[in-house]
Length: 554
Image (cartoon, rainbow, N blue to C red):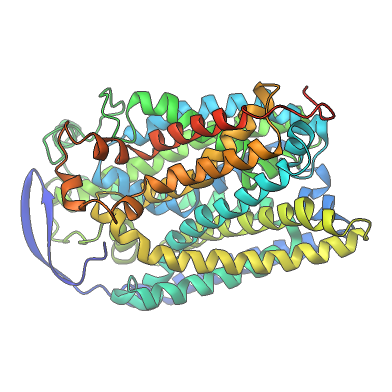
């Protein structure tokens, strides 16, 4: 929901207050030093891209897999940088500002998922010597299973990365257009600009440039967040006990913003302990084992042991990174909602919680550091775009084009891969523009940018999890049951989205559901339970098919 300038309402200290929201002109706060920092960041990216492009890329192994020579530590940083994205830089502080710390507990499931991928998936990928992870499915389930799964990945990645591009364009739009930055027209122009830059950088150096730019962007991302935490923390004037008391009663219902584990059994809450252990384990397996975007990085290492180390290292590095952004959200809540603890300043909070970190950066950060913060935001947005379009082009060339046009030279396939980068970059930009319109209903339902990005990811993951589960855990499944499983997973998740069932059910009734409204109770499950249900159904459908005798089962 985009809140127009004017009167707005926020809950502060347990009571609803009304204030006049000022007209924000974020671009006016950007000075020459800030633009200089951004220009330096752009030059560093350009320089690394040109340096990496000096290496001759003779074939698709060079362009899409970095010659299988990337160091595990760089891959680990790239994994966490890509998985965090702009959704983390903006969405996680928004989560901490508007809610509590329960999102941090999701790392329990993500660690479990990473361990499963490191011990089961990665060795299988390396034994099969596949260029994309979906080549393994052709080996296990029969010719055509991998191609169908790759097609589902491409569709799902348009959804997932398109939503991240949408989030990453928010800061750019606010810098360029000020108070009107969240208007649809301004957002779409900003998405176009971000897309063009991302396509250009990815064209130059392939996956190697993506991984090394991720390393640079991760350093900027974390440095910017640490700078913001230090600046806000240095302005706290209250005693630690008073800060803790404020946070312990900071939620609208009087509960604590310091809550780390939600032990309730409500299946409509996304971050309960049960949802974390079950749903986010599946989310972790889907992210690192069934999604070419992240799994492609694991294939750039020299062997499966290095690939396994990179994924475990990436997820462990991500835990303190997420904690840092959540703490930043709590500090922003103190700054705007409890000013008496921060020197009693009179800065009104933004009416749209998406803006909270951005407004603080533009209005309160000193020159130069403000530019570094925005560079971090742009880095997060570009990281999502760069990695996605390279992975999508890799899947298109390896799983489709080379099968249709075999026997061509390596340089020919690299050239087609570059065409794919442009095409898929444009598709992501188009879907990001669609997300500008989609986010309104999600926000009306109480969702944040973070839950929006996570929800969109589940469309493709459900079917892919079912298919990979059948391929690696059973001796069942074939290409026809794979097709059916992918379709079932996608349709079940789609049917449970408010935009779909809201066509037949009064959304107002949804928000007032009672235990007797079993239909609404099921349809309105948290996204992790929708993923769990759809994945289980997809797995059940896939194992209905008998495995062809001529394919591998090991």
